[in-house]
Every structure is written in structure tokens, then in C-alpha cells.
Picture 1 (cartoon, rainbow, N blue to C red):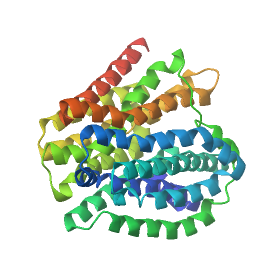
Picture 2: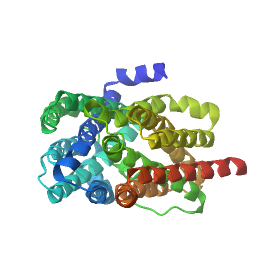
Picture 3: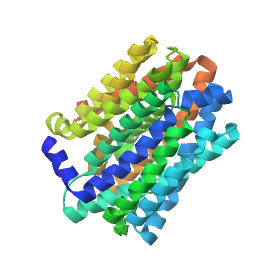
Picture 4: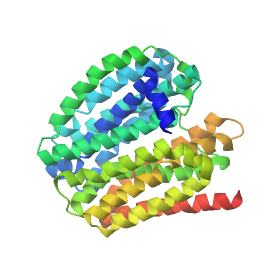
Length: 384
């Protein structure tokens, strides 16, 4: 793995797209570490917060329906650079929102820009794989988790220092814009438009990939829920303060980073379905620690969930590509579509459950999602 990562960072184009992935996650983490503060400032209930959070994945989902056409017209590289610049700009607004309506609108704008960015930057990574005849996707997504970890730790530190949320975000956005000038020279000219079609449309899963699609739905719902609700849970249930509020998501992102960078080797040795089985067991154990409701056990629990989730989606995509005998891309698209749907409805579901039964009940719901993944994986191994 060290050799592969070293070769990755020595290639300027590989490193450039990895940095783009990391920038996306750094800014997002700076936002989610402030989510408990925004909730308290605006006086939002769990149900209202869940509804407000719905607008970000909704915007991303709608963007996913049209981005392939945009990339085919303008090219993956240029769309990546401009959508990243727009995404950075949009991240300034939620921390300045005076009410829930303005917050919803700003999150919807973030969703649209991040949705375009997500598809176009993945298209660039796929194009670079083709150009250089090397597999870099897993490592590139590892940089996203690395950015999430860095952003979460920085966000937690700034909370501890007492900086208002908009101040570090403004500096981060300015630095990102400066960085994009340099990154544009590396990847801004890539015009491989065919890669935009890979996994960029909504599709219902067929019988061959239905189990995998359900696993993707459960896992991506959990990923989104940890990002949106870990800080709120730490503040509201464990009564964590200051720097500790953001450490749940920081630990989750750190574990996702390690798991994704080392996951390929484990998948090769153990097999994909057994990795899903192990991941779901780790997630269940982590959620058990979260439900204890003590600050440090909760942070450890979110970290374990990160290890559990880290390799599930890469395995699911690979298995889906092999399961659909007619088209690998169709299998991936169907699984990704249900996964994004889980990410879309997750914030609302957790918010509504927490509104009626408390945040612990929301975490119990995630536990049932992890249990569903475990049962499907176990059944698939027995059939195999």
C-alpha cells in the first residue's frame, strides 16, 4: 500500500485530483462540526433540522440527473474546476443563515454544486485511469476521507479556540480558490467526456443486484447520518463541549481514511462479501458504544463505525459490476442510485425518529440498518 500511495502522490495529475477530493471533504467537515452550534442558534428541533438537512442531498440528487450532459458538453476537467469554485463559494452561506429558510436554501445550493463536483471529479479520476492505465479510484476516495479527517480536527480546534464558524470557513475558501489556479493547470484540460455516463443516471436495481443495492442504501444512509448527527448527538446526549463535539466525525473520518487506503489488500485476502460481513459487525459494535451515551465511548463508537463502513461501498460497486452480466455500468448505476437515495432520506428519517423518540432512538434505527447489511452479507456467503 505504501508503494502504491507513494507512486500516486508522485504523479502530478493523480495528486491533483486527490487534492480536489480532499478539498470537498475539508469544507464539508468544517460545516458539520458547526452543525450543533447552528441548531442551537436557530432554535431548531431534531425534526426541523432533519428536514433542513434534506435539502443538501436533494440538490445533489437533482444535479446528478443533468451533470452527465454538462460534462459531455464541456469536459470533465473544466467542469470539475468550475464546480469546485462554486462549491467553495456556496459553503460560506449556511454559517451566516439567519433562519431555517435561508439555511435550507443555502444547503440546497451546496447540494447542487457538490453534486456536479462529485460526478465531474469522479469522471476525471476515471479518465486518468484510462490515460495512465493505472487503478487510482480507491486511493482517490481515500483522499476524500483524509480531507474529512483534517477538516473535522481543524473544525474542532477552532471551536475550542472560540472562533466564529464563518471565519475559518472564509479562510479555507480563499485558500481553495488559490489552489484551484494551480490545479487547473494539471487537470483543467481533461476532456474525456465518455466517463460522465458511468453511474451518473438514476436506475432501479434488478434482481441480480438487489441485495447489494439494499446494502448500499443502508450503508450510505449511515454515512450521511454520522456526518450530520454525530456532533448533535455528542452535544445533546453526552453533553460534550468545545473541541470534543467534532471528534466523533473526526474519528469516523480517520477510520474511513485508514480503511480505504488499506482496504484493497484486505479485500484481496478475505473476499468482498466477508469484508462486508466484518464491516457490518464493526458498525454494530460501534453503534453499541454510541448508545452507551458517554462522551469518549461515543467518540470511539463513531470511529469503529468508520472502520466498518470504509470498504463496504467499494466492495458493493465491484460486486455489482460483476453481478450484472449485461452491463457492468448498469449494475453500478443501480446500486449507486439506491445508495444515494439512502443518503437523501437519511437526514429526514433520523430527524423524525429523534423528534418522536430522542436521538438514541435515531441511533437504534442505524443499528437496524447495520444488522440488515449483516444478514444480507451472511446470506450471500452461504449461497456462495
